Amino acid sequence: QVHLVESGGGLVQAGGSLRLSCAASGSIFSINAMGWYRQAPGKPRDMVATVTSGGSTNYADSVKGRFTISRDNTKTTVYLQMNSLKPEDTAVYYCKQVLTSGSDYFPRDYWGQGTQVTVSS
Image (cartoon, rainbow, N blue to C red; front, top):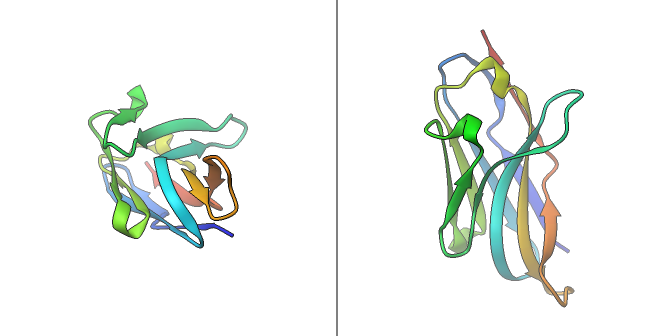
């Protein structure tokens, strides 16, 4: 069984920075893409940033130039460095890893439990 554990959320003033981490554990055969998504109250869950196994990244327009996604394949961990935070970045941030576990025949999505990020004005 695979578990994703997120950390690094919290309360920060506008203009500040936070770094989120998401570590996968369990019987993991291979990891494909990793990503961060966020969901504000009353809104759908949206993509924030993704990174492929080859290192290609993709960002939502609203975070380009402020957020940086990175991954550590050895440790099955993905990070999200968030700088110049704005109140509109306030949301629950979820990690997703597309991976093949020991009990999977094909890669599938695994989600973390979410971590709250609150940016005060």
